[in-house]
Length: 503
Image (cartoon, helix red, strand yellow):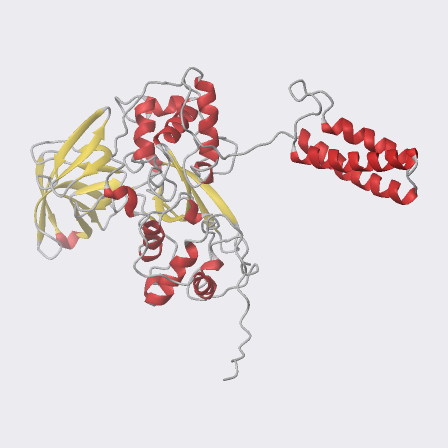
């Protein structure tokens, strides 16, 4: 064998070996510690020798291998990015580094970015935007600093709700998300870094991880369904008409799969199981109005004498945005100040929060003037209002009843009701401290109320009878299908051919 042939074979072997070593990420040869002559250099040397010594066929093969190596080399220059993080400890000597780890959890395992945005210019998410939450958190609850608020919001998110957003955030320390204490600490540091200062002070978890509640959500359901059959229910029951799922084709524009309800834009469900447990999914089907995703609730509100009926796009402490649709199908958005919402008379002081009352005006039995404030909370016996900077708790029973009477001349008089209704000959009211008697034959209308208030009642556009239409098997299969929607692409359900298989 000639020397030239030996050199050819050696250069060919060197090219193949150096290519494999480079792809495998092997250490440099011969001195790895100094990165002297990395395998990419050996590969280039071998390529040059092979192109010079070999014939056209081997040159073509060498060139092809060199092109593959070039793409691999360029790909290696692109920085790797990953949201996966496995925290075993946090180095609080560098709070910014902890915040960076928290950002990875926020965008990865925690699934926070699926609902929250950190950009005021981004389209509204399912949950509040967290821009500057590091400083804004200190203003949310009087007497609570930013870190305490964030801790409470992470562990018990239902305690403090931003106006316009329902109880849709899961307890992230529970399954299926199941963040560890270290991961939650890192996320809190990341949130504090959004406009605020990172506080590295240790804290005790306000929950007991050994409690049965931690694992309850992870328990298998009593009834197990078939995801494939559930996918068919999702299409046949017209869920796909309003909800999008990656991989399942929605009806074309103008096409309807069910004439019994209005087709509206509803939340995308492609990742619904990634950050919600089975209890939430089941409740969303059986009691669709229990927790309404922000931006998708149906609302009817009256402001300055005009009624707006449509979708509640957003809500804060000062205003709401309602999207309505004209008879021609043109969508319009209306910004309405809460102060502009008309007061409604209230006959019974029960379930005020559930009915959507924002403010309340009532007159205590021992007072001469009405009290108006923001509705904070209520029980069966009392209601708490925020009047200015003060919280006042008032009885629901010791309240003066008011009556509004309207004469045929259009005059409207409001006074404390003493006696009489439209079924009697006269009605007695106390107006401006003096008793007045009204002949019911002179009155066009008389309305008895115990209070009044501004109301914003948000409901789910999902048909109320939907749970009734499903059999137990359909519901079980549908839940089984929804539990698979963790972000992976779903397969489209094959169309029915109408043919029956031969027996």
